[in-house]
Image (cartoon, rainbow, N blue to C red; front, side):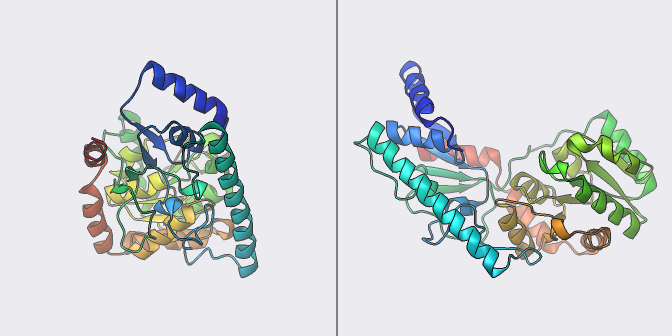
Amino acid sequence: MLAEPERVLEDLRSLHARRPADWYVVDQLSYSVTLALHCLDLQYATFCPGHPSYLSAAPDALFGVPYAWPDAVRPATAGLRTLREEALLNDRSFTAFFARFVSLHAPHRPVPRRAFTLCSPRAVVLHYPRLDWLPSRPEGPEYVFSGHFTRAEPEGPGPFWESELRRLRLGGRRVVLVALGTFLSARHDVLEAVARGILSERQDTSVILAAGDRADSLTALAGPRVSVAATVPQQALLARVDAMVHHGGNNSFTECLAAGVPALLLPFSSDQFSIAHDAERAGVGLCLDPNGLDAGSAGRAVSTLLNAPRHALNELRRHVRSRGPAQAASRLIHLMA
């Protein structure tokens, strides 16, 4: 996340000299770019692709330590203490590097108080819904909550998936999408447990399994009620399925909200724990520990989601759908004018 900062600084300086921009938009996790923009004193907006707590104002908040934990995943006191100690060392190391870099390359610029909270002083776009209980953020910039980044009118899933959906509906009138993201699809043990649990618990339910490069190892599951694929058109399918099982990634979370689809979250790392907590608190999903998962608990959790009323989900869906990429872009342009 801090790759080749000197080269990035020089590349950005050269780019701006050739094609000067009025302002830039930078991924908040691209720390080398943010550091370069700060040193060059260029106007920019910050885009935060993860949980809003990645930019926390609380003095005891640390990057890499969830601001809140879901009920099913709560580390022991000793483990949490170790995590906080490591995160604090990382925070201090990052901040010290930023200070040395600014002093060397831009001594006229202020030294960031904390590296992980360095962001645009003008505008920050948060890829998240505005939830009442979220922690406070650094003072200064205007915050734009995008709610979601899905198409206003989702494209269809295409002929193949149209055919697959018809086939799966013959096997079970409900369909559940299971996808753990790009690199977590390597946890084929979790994917298999979830699929088998749903099939055993719900005779009326079929499964679409996005298995990444482990698709071949899970082909034995394929059948009248299961479709196994390396990749799936997730946004298009969410408009057509009844529930989803995902890893608590921000895209999956907000895409489910925009589609009005309840979710079982299986968080593994990073901000996924905070997102799983928010999903539970908002009443739009359930969370289980993926590392202690068995087929029975997964199947029962999905069944609970399919049977539960969706008042909270529908309310949050309306809130999320009232925003979106077009609204966020319009607001950002106004703030940066």
